Length: 330
Image (cartoon, rainbow, N blue to C red; front, side, top):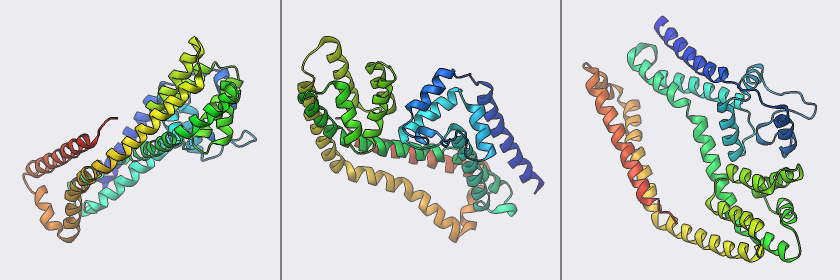
């Protein structure tokens, strides 16, 4: 029991030391940036803000302290950008606290799954894997939300371009067409273009605002649209015709991607199922016949652990190879 307490305490200390390294790299944000962020936010809770209308911070003492200490660091900037892309209303301190909680939770689950206090080294190994794996759970969720939001944005992009083309032909300026998109289109595309419109109202050049949009939404189709708008502003031309041509290209690309996704669905899901099958069977055997699975951890333990490690590496290689086969660029 004392050994377990010491191990858990050591892991927590290492996590806190890692947090301290980020905290020591703090950089003071300018007052101008802080004030601009308040105006650029769509609403009080937009893009990670947790302040109410009165300016008082909500949340626990721990998350508020982490927010203050992480503010201005490179880690906080990356987390803010990642959360903004996923449209998750959290601050870097709250995200970091979620990482710690997920790590501790999966570590405890792994400890008891490995046999608890009576299992000795086996339980400690499972707990260590749980602590490490739990740190990646919030990031996996954020990446998934980013992918879903990016897909919704891409599906709405042709309709948005049609709206802009119609507005330009009706006599709207580019800024007025962007304002129409921010009012008429559904989420998430209206939120992003409303932010672009608000930035331009604050005096930020259109090129910079569109570059900020492209940084939040890393889409190849959007990059094509932004490039066309920037080039038209520099050299002139009929923007409505350019956007109409781009709309047709994007619709054809979406159609081809849908056909490719249908044709490669069997390979994708086969790769996922075959990769999960050994884990499912191992979990079932661990529950039904633990003594049989414990043969991997008998002396010499290095032999059984090496076999498990090689199996895991081969499963990951097979999964990535099958996913690469199904990943066809259009």
